[in-house]
Amino acid sequence: MRNITDNLELLYSASEIRKRIKTLGALISKKYDKKDPIFIGVLNGSFIFMADLLRSISIECEMDFIKVRSYSGQKSSGTIQLLKDISADVKDRDIILVEDIIDTGLTIKFLRNRLFGSSPKSIAIATLLFKPSVAEIDFDIDYIGFEIPQEYVVGYGLDYEQKLRHLDGLYCIK
Ligand code: IMP
Image (cartoon, rainbow, N blue to C red; front, side):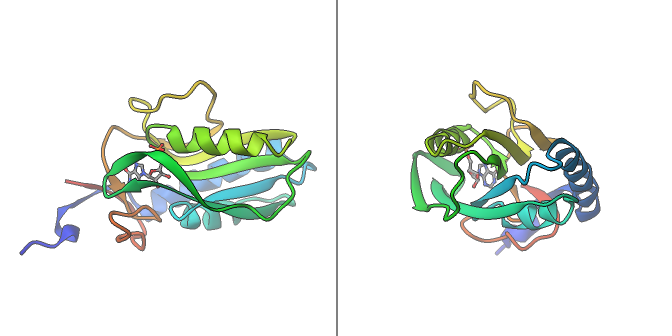
């Protein structure tokens, strides 16, 4: 029997990801200097990206996490469930919402709308991966690690049925 890890094709190596995140961190640090932004990571998928992005930030900042569920297996369920809310008060704060991947855009739309309800000063979006051919959104994505085609990606925090998050590179399932 073949294992799922036999069917993986490397998309971005750990060192390519590290390099790109350093660039994103520098851009964000420049733009948010003296603004004390709060990074909000979307669990579970963004936990590794969030950890590396935060360590590439050279200005004062805070962080929190929010958790939603929208996928089962490789398919979007079409409805978003909030599993854990943020604890921070984000009124009048500059938020940077940190996603692992924007696929259909449903999750990011839901989260952005929800967070706007808490009256922040601004909301920017940072995503490691973006599938431009699939996403249906009517707002800008401010920081994108990599644009990718319509393929299912795992590793570096992204799962397939809750597995494979531990891989240090990003892989397509062949
Ligand atoms: P969206 O709502 O369709 O944009 O999907 C957002 C969420 O679905 C992401 O935060 C991921 O958790 C999950 N997701 C979408 N595409 C992939 C993928 O290719 N690999 C792993 N998870 C994915």
